[in-house]
Length: 383
Ligand code: PLP
Picture 1: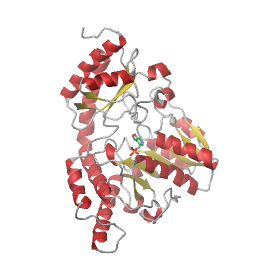
Picture 2 (picture 1 turned 120 degrees about the horizontal axis):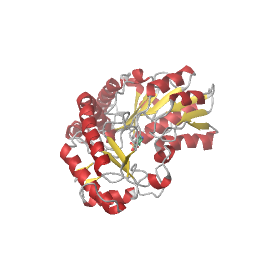
Picture 3 (picture 1 turned 30 degrees about the vertical axis):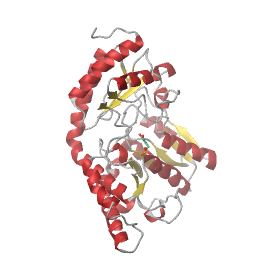
Picture 4 (picture 1 turned 60 degrees about the horizontal axis):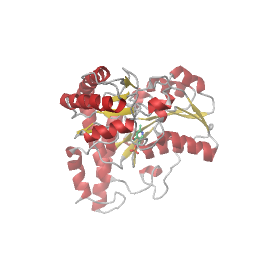
């Protein structure tokens, strides 16, 4: 099988599992326990926090371990908004992950917040000037994703954070898809909160982290024993945190070379798909996109049918995002980018990993050309 759905999830890397193993077996303590087992676990958690903080360029105390990207986004949006008395207005975009959209919608429904959605263009790019115009004196939070999970478009986060900062609003970015591919230095980005998730990076599912700038108040969304300095109760996932730290460090160390190498492979793949697959259209920005993302529409097909046909041919990809897959609704991201619902239903996303090869992609182009020609009735360019 050729696995090209790494934006949905990735396998745990062997080095990550090896780092985690002791904390799943002999060193299984609860970091809140005061005996030796607990002390060892607490020490492992401290080291993991320090390692994550180093990659994010922040203090260890500014890292909160969570159960993943969804929880990190919820805590940043709900927790920060409820703890900020200056107003009840949030600015975000219609292409965010559901974890962001639904958190905003919860604040709207249950706490009377007003949510302004700033439009994106046909490449999925947020217009920073338009976002600037949406900011108000009572804007509590701006939440814009660093890079989109479906089409890979990378947003001008520094610029947006500077605009938010200028009116005193907090800035959160969902960096779940960006982590491992783009620089994560929170000071350079100018953000107050940043969410990451382990399973997109080669760590297990069920672990994530949220950077929360020092001094920023947050209302906890999980209540209990007061772990994570009261910001996230619940016994810490020590092996997960160790795994996340290892995966993040490995990805960050490899990034300078791997991002360019994968982008080159991906560019060649996009060129060939556009040339050889009948009717293929690229979705997302040509240049400002995640190195591993190649997403298309194939008019005359259904994305779901292409996905299933490719799976029969040994290639795994996705029709839009994993969350939208299996639903009849067209992707909210593509619709926000101005695609009509019929075209949006033909979307297919390929997301590469560090281990994807040129041969994998050549086989994918051939299978895709054949599959789309068969499903759409267009003649294949090869035939
Ligand atoms: N944000 C983005 C951009 C994502 O792509 C995802 C997962 O697909 C999430 C948030 C949710 O992360 P998790 O699966 O760790 O809850």
